Length: 157
Figure: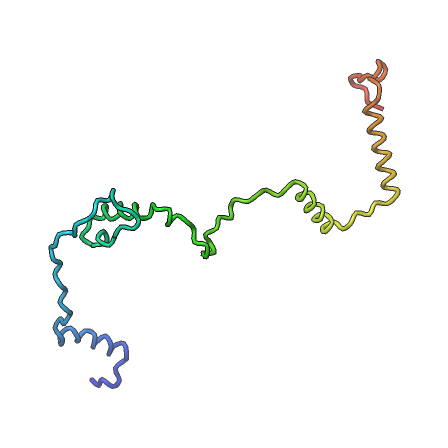
């Protein structure tokens, strides 16, 4: 069989399979984990922000102890201040409500932009005044007399 006409993937697969047979495992020796005791630690209650926290980062330290030391470290007010240069650190969810006068002005402008400026003709103004006078007269009308009382089955005129 000629190897010149062998497909690329076939050749790659063949070489990949032959490689472990030719070369014994030459992986670097992994150092054995030494059973050294954890470094001496300062009590978590005595830790201050300027204390050395590096012994708590040792992999042989109990994760619960490490977590409590980090809680003690990050409870300091220095870490609770937002970064002024971080663009998303500000809280924009709390804002002052829009004053009522400004809201009315915004709605007025919106109405003019949508409907156009109001153009009331003289006839419409007179009709509106007449309607308003009718409403005022009906509100001040005298209590109905016996003749004008509602009678069941009779239609109003």
